[in-house]
Length: 171
Image (cartoon, rainbow, N blue to C red; front, side, top):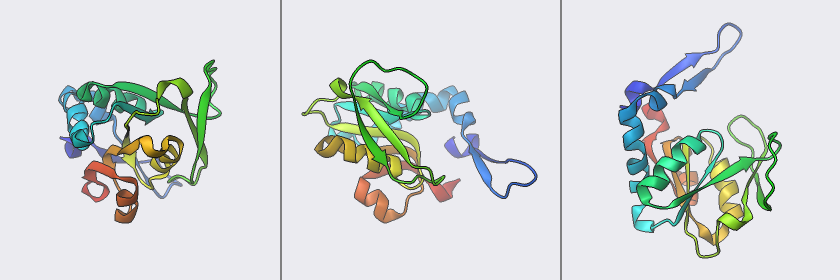
């Protein structure tokens, strides 16, 4: 179903690359119903106590996985966004991502405790940059990253414990 609901789209004249269109995943209630349990199943044995997901798409997928695991959800915000967060935050630099951008991700300091086992959840891992940044931020609390699509090089996926429902070349 994931493959059938996904498509590559062209940006139009003057652009020489395709953009992933995942909107079919969010539109299909059967996919939404199955995503949380499927991604949670990738790390069930590690018994995560909380899910952390980077904005934007992670904010859609992360709660589905948290619900399936019976744990809570914590947002990882990108620095520089136009929103005020009153609570103390902890931040980590994210290595250059698939677009070549450098980011910072932060979570509310009081929402992840020293004994938590954190599962990072997102829709796509291309380089592992966000997982790496969050692993650096979370330290020993990081258990791995569950993603819908893992197109990282195998050594990166192994190093960061990234597990996906689909490899990148399946799309």
